[in-house]
Image (tube, one colour):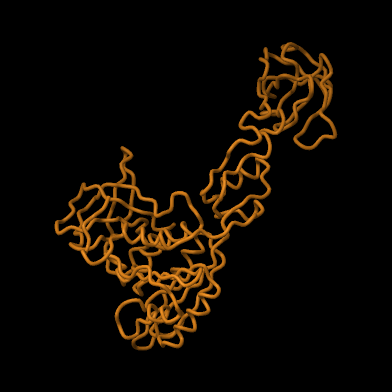
Length: 407
């Protein structure tokens, strides 16, 4: 999986290993099931009840003794889905009207579907075919028993997981605390959309990009601040962020210019450098440092560089902070539809669109305008191809790795 990279800089996998070594998972907290979405489990979660929790009807119909059918049977009562003071009882030689999800009465061992019956007034029903024992009954514990493992440790919970746990009676569970995230957008030239641009100004893409990506991924404790390009402003903003956050994300100010103040500002505040610069294109001047319990990830200022570092390195860092068993980015493969030219010294992140052909083969379409200051192709791109460094063109038909652009 490794690829040739610049001899003086770590490649993507080497840089991720350095990042991993600098991160300890956040502490555990106990949360109610309503607050568990997007959180990561710290231990295996087991069912708190049987599923189903009682013998229940799978259909609208009539509960009866299978030995009594076919026959005309008097009706004893109606059983709807809902609570009962005690379990209903089916008298011998009778049937009960029952609805889907209803508690099977004591003495009944089958349910005959409504469409297989003929109602005789209000007091009787004719069962028109034999009914086997167990017909259309969901037996207690059919799906799982109390104590069955449901979700293993290190899983990020999605809506389906939360529904399963709630249905299995899990009211609380232990998860990693949600990370507190602070975002600092640097650059005197950056202004918010809606104002008229003056010569030399650009509209702010990085703030909405980072905050939107974090919101889409389910992170709520996020604050975004614009920071002026002065030593004092940078140090003040970093000091506040370090005091409040588990993860500090900055955009811009991490290269080698006189106004690239993030790294020196952080280190003057006592931050310890983890890595600076990765042999990747775009996004080379990635800066990572630690100060106390806070992790700082300084992303380059060009929007495409911010994007690729979000979905690769920031995704990795968040998964490590939250104790995900298989941290991202998750990698898949596909076949190039058109050839591309790799960088000879750095691994490349290429914005692509994927589709599946009639045979189920994943086809990868590189998009135009790949420069690091360009975002126009995000209207069509949905993945990033991870391309090894090479002096040779990569022709159509080549197999490439890719990661998701969204999460």
